[in-house]
Length: 254
Figure (spheres, rainbow, N blue to C red):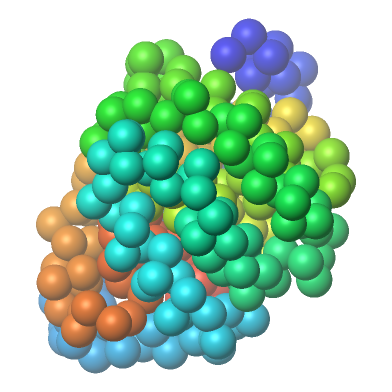
């Protein structure tokens, strides 16, 4: 994206930022590999405990209900579900339970939320549902362009900032592709500078490009956490395991 290239060229500390991301990525990978090798079942329990100790403690059931529909959905079924009443309502309630109406990026009223969501339905295609997060290694790929178009079309919060609300909603819709982002954990763990947050699509791309590369290098260990979970915990998809790992890292290492 042109604005990201321009922003990078004028951000004097960009090299320092890249080094910080590299250092944090190495620390996360070392933590992941060490804990999985020591005792994968215990680490799953620890990840779930840390995720449950956030404001999300009460919303696991709602999250699993969303994934039951979206995790293996087809584009046709997804579009049909979003044009109905039940799926938009469950998505809204789950976002609320993830604290979206308690922070700066508060949700619009439900009817407006539903209208905005349904206006983006035509942009949903197979690439969004069938691709994995590694696709972000090439930020110019057709799938990433589709992701950005969908991201840009969503206006479900009352405030100008869209990064947190859109990433969480898109994770619910495309759980194998998108990492849920928040300022408390994701932004802090990677050290995303305020400058970069001013260009939200760039922050979104930066985080997902990092995540795509991280997953490619560590998928075997991330997958073991999914397999070791009982099926009723937080470790349901690769992007959510990455999110859980970040939460764990921030709570125990920073």
